[in-house]
Image 1 (cartoon, rainbow, N blue to C red):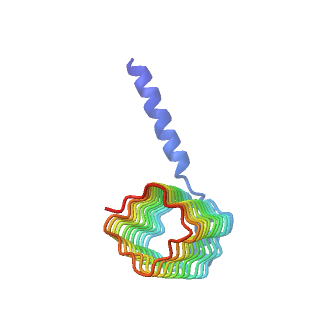
Image 2: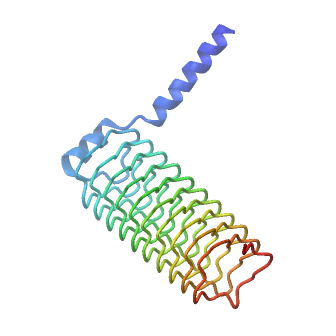
Length: 247
């Protein structure tokens, strides 16, 4: 029995080490030049660095710690950042198209005008992040945490936001055309003038949300919780309202 436990422990440690083992040469290249396209930087400690305008296309940054690092206008197209720590990073105008951000931590990150289109951010944590004018078109944000975000004018068109969390999120003038918000939690969210054409909000919770002048044309509001929601000049006339909860 003890031998089996020892072998299992050793295998687990080996898997963890392999998952977080960066390439020394690639790390040295990044620190010396500020660029490392397609490099293996998995598990690297890259805290509080200035990597603005860095070329990190296709880089492996899984498990990397980038807390507080400046990545303004950096190019991370197709990079993998699974379980990476991006807390309080500055990603303003960075290119994160087609990146893998599953389980990544982006709490308090500055992502204003950042391009996340086509990215996979499954269960990523964006709590309190700045996302004004960010682009999440066609991205996967299923089960992601977006509580308290500033998402003014953010584009979530055709994004998968099923089971996501938007508690008290600022989504004024956000575009959610064709987005999948099945069972999403939007309690107290501000959706003033937001566009939700053909969005799927079945079983979503919009309790106490501000829907002033929001456009739900052809949206699916089947069994959507609209209790105490602020509905003033809200466009609902062509929406599917099948057994919504209104009080």
